[in-house]
Each structure stands twice: as structure tokens, then as C-alpha cells.
Length: 188
Image 1 (cartoon, rainbow, N blue to C red):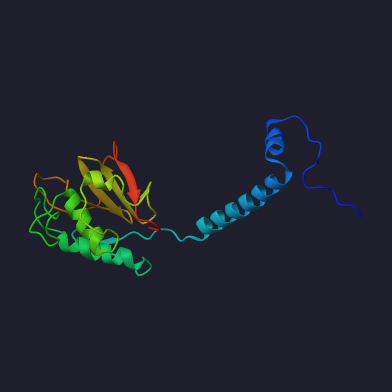
Image 2 (image 1 turned 60 degrees about the horizontal axis):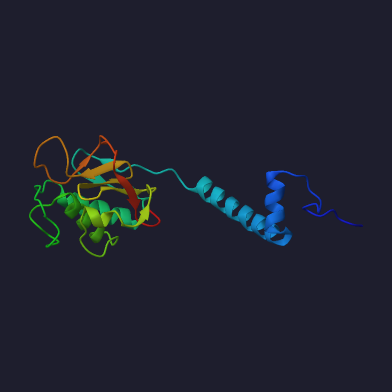
């Protein structure tokens, strides 16, 4: 009993057929197999990933859900400790526990305390932080040389708010992301 080949030796003249011919039969089969397995794995992971549970917010402090990873719990705890600190230009860059924080100083402090950053960074440094694009749980938005803010499970941690000189706070309403680059810690 003879079995028909997966890819016929003689295939019609189409762009797809030319691609297969250019790659060669064996290489195409390998890429096709690995591509299919990779695609199935990614689809399975995205299909099985639970929806993101938002942080609980009481108007001042945020609280992580028990299903959030330990990094998110540490991040939220560190951010809660900065709430109500005043805005201070350059604050949080020279001293980890400063008496005031600017945008990048507060984000640096929180990420450092959560074990997601090795040293204080400014907004230019954050343009190279982590992985490009929005994260599933944590996203750092940066406009190099201007401003940095962070979203954690749907809640924004930011120094820009309704009043001049307002320091780091959790905020519900979103803000414009125009001109900002999204970055995120690996796996978050």
C-alpha cells in the first residue's frame, strides 16, 4: 500500500507553491511541524490563561488578589507605602526611602522593592526597561525625558493627577497614552 506524500512533487503555480518549492520539501515539513506545534502551544496558553483579576481599590490603597503572583503583591505593597508622599523633583533616585518622589523615582522604588529592577532609573532608562509592549498584569508607560507611570491589573500608579505637586497615588481614571511607549517586566 503506497501512501500519498504530504506535499505533492508537482504543485501548481501559486505564490504559496513557490514558497514551498523555494524552501525545499524537507525544510518546509520541519518548519510546518514546528510552526504548527508552536501555534498550538501559544493558542493553548492564551486559551488557558485566566482573565486578569483587577486590584481591589478603596480609594487610597490597592490590594492584590490571592491569584496574583508574588511580584504583584510586593509591587502593590511597595506602592501603597508611597501613597501620600509629596512630589519632589529627583526624589527617589539617590535615596531609596526618600521624603518625596518624582514620577520615575516612584516607579523605580516600587519595581526595585518588588524585585523587578536593580537600580533607580530615570524616564530615559525606562525606555529600555523589560520587554516592549503592554504586559498582562504590569505595564510601564514611558515618554523618555518627560514622564513615567505604571498600570497594575487595571489600576494606574502615577504622580500626575488633579493637583499641582501631588505625589505618587493609585488612580482609577486612565490617562492619555499618546506618545508613551509601553514596556513590561518579563512574564508579567
